[in-house]
Length: 209
Image 1 (cartoon, rainbow, N blue to C red):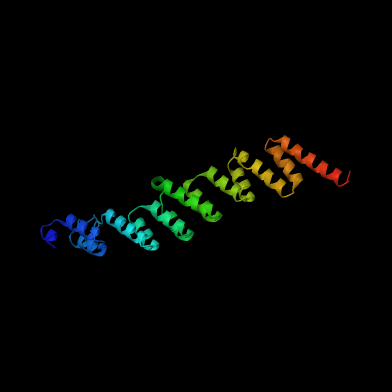
Image 2: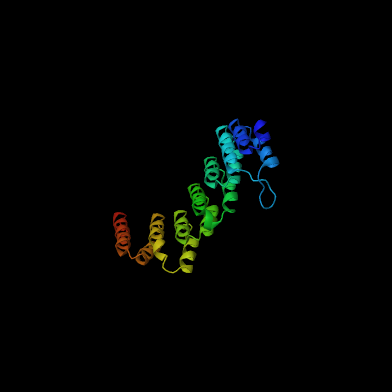
C-alpha cells in the first residue's frame, strides 16, 4: 500500500478500519506501529471499538463484548452481557475492575445482578464498592434477614434500615408476635397496635373471645 511506503501508517490503518478489515489493520500496527515500553505494539483503542461495534451490529455479542473490554469500554461490555442475561461473564468483568477507577461500572454490574435476583453476585459487587448501605438494601430487598441483621450488628446505626421492612415481612407472614416487637424496635408502636386490633377483630369474628 502506498500509504505504508510513504510511512503514513495511521492513514493506512484508518482505511483498513473503514473497510472493516480489522485483521489487516492490526497486522499493520504490529509491523509498523509504535511500540509500548514492553515492546508490545500499541493498538489504538478506536480500532477495537469500531470492530466491537461491527461485531455487535452483526449479533456477534460475545466477540463484541470481548473487544469492548480490551478497549477499556467496560460499560458497553457489561450492557451486552446484561441483555443476554449472562451474569457469569458480567462477574468476570466485575472482579477485574478497580474500585477507584471503575466505580460506575461496578455499580452497573451490581444493578444487573440485583435485577436478576442473584444475591451472591450482587453482594460481591457491593463489597467491592465498600457500599454498606447498598449491601444492606440488597439484603432487605432479597429478604436475607439473617445477613441483614448480622450486617446491622457490625455497623451500629444501620438498624433503622432493616427494622421496619423486617416487621412488615413478619406481619405478612403471620408472625404477629414477632412483628409487634419488630414494630416497636422500628419506633412504630402505631403499627404494633394495629396488629393487636387486627387479632382482636379476628377473635371476635371467630367467636374466640
